[in-house]
Length: 206
Image (cartoon, rainbow, N blue to C red; front, top):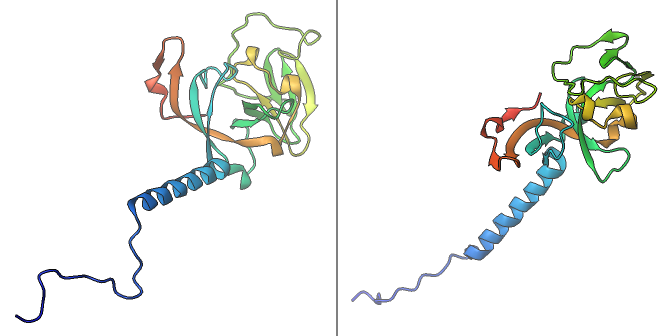
């Protein structure tokens, strides 16, 4: 016999930490994931659901979109950007519209046609489903302005022009109210047919 017993006791080297329990490892992973999710949601990307038809046909009711929240920290909105923002009349609500007028632009609508700085703009995304044209004395929907967009503010319009509550009715959007730029449809649910719109998933928002 060389002095070794049948039952060997293994001791931890001095300075070595005791292994974490499985519970603690999972708990730490969950906490880290939650913190990362909160940081991402607050500063980088946030998900929103489209509840109304003001952006038809670009965005359908039931589309779930991702919004880039940091892009406008480094650049200003461009004409045509689809933006989520705090509704100026009630900041507890989020609206989504398209950027039409930039700071210092002259905006005018003549018989539904949008003019920027006295030039008509091409709007392949805009639709008009109401055959009736409303005179400017009745509503600003089809005849509006001219107005000049103040510095630091924007003129927003929905793509579904005849059924959109936008800058024609509530005024300009202050840049400080912008949440971010919509860029992707990640899920879409058709509540009438009770089924997903598979073809819309992964679509880029233009």
